[in-house]
Image 1 (cartoon, one colour):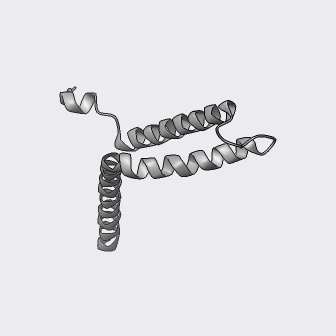
Image 2: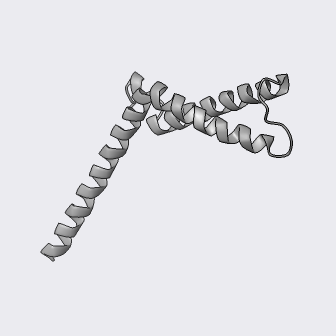
Length: 101
């Protein structure tokens, strides 16, 4: 049984890391907006207030994530592209083996 290198054992998968950080940014933005509504700084009251808070939280957190999480997004993209290439090579190899028969 081989032991993975130290950096492999403690490394979080880039997709999980990116998704977790996106959710965290959304939750923080939603909490801040909710706090501003509670203080009366934003006029989103009534029955549709929660919907406005969620809509603005999605918009604001998306903009923040675009700029703040670019490194994590690039790392996630690299992993996904590598995996897609491996699957494609395996598919092509299997198709070639099938053609040989």
